[in-house]
Amino acid sequence: MQAPGTEVQDRLARALHTLRMRSTFYCHAELTDPWALEMPAIADSVSFHVVTAGTCWLRLPGDEPIEVRAGDLALVPHGLGHDLLSEPWAGPGPRVDLLPQQYLSANYSILRYGGRGRAAQLICGIVSFDDPAARELIRTLPAVLFVGGDTVSAASSVRDTLRLMAGELSHPQPGGEAVATRLADILVVQAIRAWLATERGATAGWLRALRDDRIGRVLESIHDDPGRDWSVDRLARAATMSRSSFSARFTELVGEAPVAYLTRWRMNLAHSRLLEEDISAARLATELGYQSEAAFNRAFTRVVGRTPGSIRRQKRSSLARQDSGAPATGPGARSDRYG
Image 1 (cartoon, helix red, strand yellow):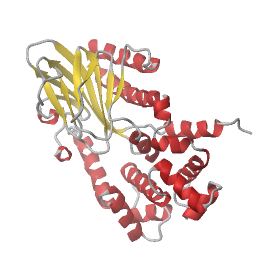
Image 2 (cartoon, one colour):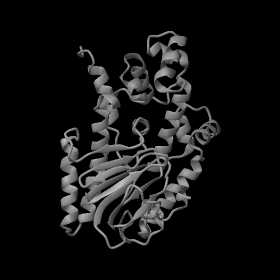
Image 3 (cartoon, helix red, strand yellow):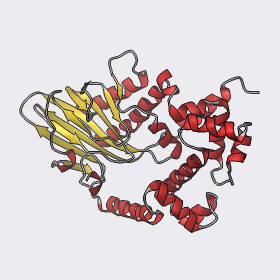
Image 4 (spheres, helix red, strand yellow):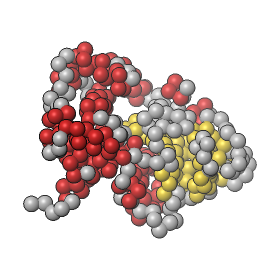
């Protein structure tokens, strides 16, 4: 028999295990005062900035600027646009994707920009999480997740990775950009896990629902078998609750009704598989519990905002860009998605 709370911790551990990234782009920015950059909004993405030398200020619309010093990390989830500045009172600068830069690969560039003043160096990146559980976790994050490299509260693993990244960039060697990007992958996951380990993170939205004994059990049942013929009655039985009590409790914790959550989970899973696999909408419809491909297509378009066919075309276009060596969508790449 499991000890009290062990089942809940196991559910949390399985959710954290899903923090794997996709569609990454990295930019090594070498900036000299005065400078200002606009980081455009990109839907369903997380931007991050690591200062490896000097200092900068990060400003979200309507918020006070945040100082980010050497050794610090700032994550901006939810696809929010923001400014990076050499001084907190600086006005907006040009969009970073419109500036000339040196592309070392389809996913990595070097940007040199600014005046003749003091220098700052940053690693900036954009990442996305297509696994449905990871996307739910990202939704719980604050507008800015800040990890100070010189504070006691910063996780030691985050500080160690920041030091490794700074060392790699300060003494360039062949393949250094590849090492830096792999370290950035690790860094983002470490920062999110460190935040989730705090009391603030543990009580946030979906994560709080996952920790709930009865609702968490239902969530994991949906995640384990999304194609099952789930109904509110069947989900309530899994929670050992009455239908009305279950619906009220689920909606309170998760923020949406059980059937709405089930549909969104299925569509996020379908979206991820369309990007990762060569799979048809008809097969997804069968595996995810839909009676017809047409019913699946309607639900997918309503939730995702695009048709399954458009996702497949996006995947083919992305593969073609990679084969040609063209820059990927990211901080240093031009793309209609920035419009």
